Image: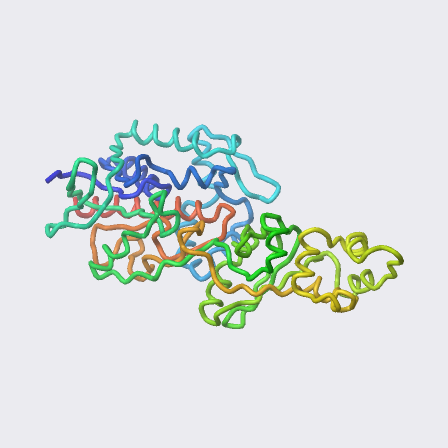
Length: 411
């Protein structure tokens, strides 16, 4: 049996690496274990199109993004929120900038330079990183068991931080395989559900063939969830073969998913001309068009063309398209019937996981003393825009501080 005198961190994503950094700074030897051939794989892929580290909006608005988990995450974000995270990135030698949407990015837009600098600092501090080590269970004596290319390896640290991610992107290591391992130890786990995901719509073959892959920009979307609460967001999304995805859809994914679970489907209502009220749109549509086609008329008078015009024709019949009032009303309130969330493994992130009720204030499992949890494996969710990463970093730091306090109390 291999025995470690320090701490084990299982999971080499942002939460795990941050927990390791805190422990190392406290003088604790740390072994980092990851089942993949290298650490930070999901982090790198998430930053492929530009690493959105955090968001620069005011704190109160920022906290609202965490919904009914705000009360649990607020103390963690107060200790290490957007401004602290940005300062930490700068300390690694990575410059950042705030985009027009208030999202914060590295100057080079890439995740790889940040991860390289971070791993260099961790190794210089003494971190021992073990890749291709997939955690499989505990032994009867409480040691950690790992499946490796060299066979089973066992370690018995003084404390453990679990930062194993959610259940999305299994190919990058976040496969939810930890759920039965904790359940076997009596930890009740909230079911893992897709978050920041696409949704299915039964498009006509004509619409799908003509518009799949096209963005729908400058729209507002509303829905009323199963509890009667209204939700509204403005932005853009993308039409897909199966339905819809993109930032606007992701921002509403929690109420969309939960309402479908309760009712079997949900109607998402689009305002395709959010800068104009219904009276103005009605007047523009009813304006005499002379010899111009309806398509040209709608484009010139209301700015409805391309995929927006396709959406209009997808929900209105040919005769209804000749009714100016009906057309105007639909431009302002076009109904889309969503029938299912896409599978968990396609989602950007995960809802569900270890309930906060199972953890103490330092993120230690109440029923497993010396075992801490952090990151996406906790039961919370947030939209894209830097909120996911910020809370992962913050919870990793909190778990690391909790583990450090535990080791101080029980050396």
